[in-house]
Length: 253
Image 1 (cartoon, one colour):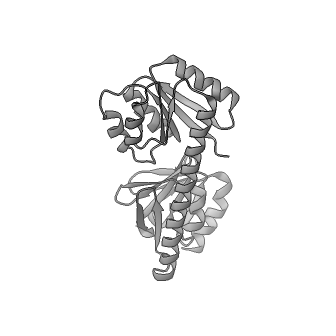
Image 2: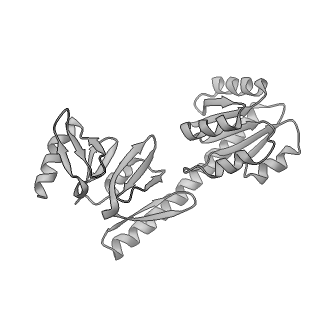
Image 3: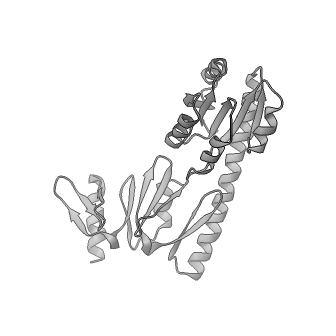
């Protein structure tokens, strides 16, 4: 079972109280990581916490919230609208809501909405995994493993491995830092890329970092053990990985 992080956007304390009560009784299904009545603060909370689902019980004056939501760089959360007015359902589904809950809120309806969120996430992951698998198979067959496919829900980016400076874990996501300064986000965790990236030039120096050793400018042993890159970024080498890293570098000198 996927446990969903949620944010509540509401100007009605009763809705928040009911959802908090729901979480008390169903803590294995959902967790509330933030709540607000401010649209601007809601976007900030979403960017910070990256929830899977957002419950909305507020009247929007315009589409500013949805415009800002469309601009975030990671997979947008699933939206569940809550209202005592039936006509709000039209606006909800116009803005790709996964469900609409009519007040008074019943817990069974919340559970059904969360089930729809979980099923949508599962289908997206299957679709994403299939895209990546197919592209990586073609890459291995035709290009000798020179590229890595990084997929999100709406696009796949093909990155030449020589252009990757390092990969960094950020929560459950992975960021690819490229030589040109560009950052590309993947919804896969860093561990999955440990097996995908060519081990001839990539090494996992830390639980949060995989580096391309071809782009290291300095290995510093002052005040710790660090790999430094030409752009000034210095990444720590975990103590338990230092011996293996030294062997890895020496084998390729």
